[in-house]
Length: 258
Image (tube, rainbow, N blue to C red):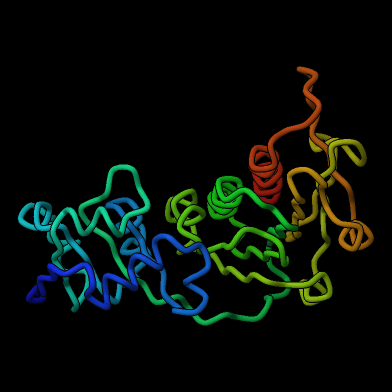
């Protein structure tokens, strides 16, 4: 049953102030324990995982034609004028719907599972793309070391396209925190190690992906079970880290299934 919507028309409303902060401040989610999900795709991705938002926000123009699954998604429904949604949105073309979702409690590193480790990756698009690849290829845990782009920032969430909701995400870690993994760590490299297409890839394992310019840090390099590089017959010096991640994670997942 659809909840009776509450109409808000003042930009100074406390809820809208909070939404603007969540939508425009990349680390506000850490203090609030909530994340803003804007647009039909992200909202439906949340629902597809059997999760429910705390609040569903619709524009007054979209509400009359909103599908019932979005209308019925939350017990707290808010309608705002299109102009107020535009003031919240971080998008060039504001969406007609957004959800506020309570982040899951921070969990401990899980040992013995297929994992992706992010070592100080800076670009939100790269991080979101790697989360998509991790989810697609069965790597259910992603661990981010300190210095990595905020995993639940609006830009990373948009780039992740819903992958966040199927992953165990832990950020702000130090190298010593990875001792709990208990699986071999494979470090990607542009200049050393076995060629990916020839390497024996263990499963489960942890793929370590490093800073876009500096690569993987020395502390993690010292713990590597193996170094892996990707053949590039076209002669490019290196691959974008998100592209390299997709290739490596796919190779690991396919071989584990054979």
